[in-house]
Amino acid sequence: MDKSQARLIWISVAFSTVVLVIVLATTFDTNTLLTILKLNLWFLLLATLLRIASLLFWALRIRTMSGSLGYTVKFSHCFNLVIANLLAGAITPGQAGGEPVRIHELYRADLKIGDATAIVLMERVLDGVVLVIMGVLAMVFLQSIWRGLNIGLIIGMFVGLAVMIGLIILLFYSARKPERAKVFLTRIITWAGTRWKGKTMQKVVRYADEEMDNFFVSLHRFTTSARKGLIYGTVFTTLFWASEFFVASLLLLSLAQPPFIAESYLFQLIIAIVMMIPLTPGSSGIAELSATSLYALIVPASVLGLFVLLWRVLLFYFNIVVGLVASLNIFRRELRITNEKNVVATDPQVQEDADE
Image 1 (spheres, helix red, strand yellow):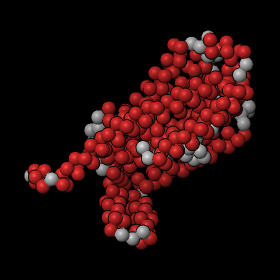
Image 2 (cartoon, one colour; image 1 turned 30 degrees about the vertical axis):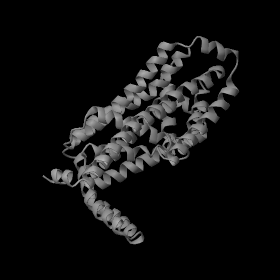
Image 3 (cartoon, rainbow, N blue to C red; image 1 turned 120 degrees about the vertical axis):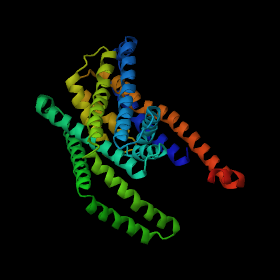
Image 4 (tube, rainbow, N blue to C red; image 1 turned 90 degrees about the vertical axis):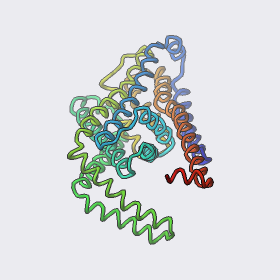
């Protein structure tokens, strides 16, 4: 890990910690202590297991979508890339850093860059479709709860929904009209090639042209012959978000509170969409404030800070810890690959054997 990544981790954790301390300090009283003493560890364990299950659903989504394009990726590899992606998402605005990690790891599983990019972008599309559907259902069936929500959070949710809908439309247009999309991207890459001249940049331009063909072919296949990947991907996407959202209800039960399943699903939906807006690294601070303002409507003040702390531990600090472990595995593998390449490059006999 380089210094810039370490700095981003510290910044992200600092944002989150400061807000959590403020929330705890303003809600802590004698009832909070009693709640801690009566904490139900079984529900806490169930919440942790459900969080892990949601990540398993994510890994299954990647594996089935890769399979629909004709690739066989080990489930263990898919799970490790999902875990590593959590760290990158936790330290980048809008959790955008996870996409390059997933693309790189799919490439290491022998997928073409264009195909890997198509899979990862289609994941975003499926997330958007599922969350938009959940949002529409929530607006229809939970109208009474909407009236008590903060207007800022509602605006943030609609901005996030608009961005996701825009991405969905753009990608499906690209899948149906790949020639026009390719012309647009080629112009951007060509402009970059003229601005930053050099052999490396020229190589990138040539390579990008080839991979764009793979990318648009894969996008088109997802809407035609590889539609099975989208179907299974949608199933696993729904299971992922449903399990992620239900974690909060289990945490409420661990604190001897009603699960508030419907309300909690709505709140988690709003938070998930707001967190996709690139404001702070890993949306730290934003997530805590959003959860506090929403759950204050249904959770006693003495329990609120404790709930937000447990929720953030499972959905943020957990990501950093396990993400570091998975990233270390990737670092060791990359180091081994680099060493093997260096041996081949410096040893004529090894080079000759490799050529044979």
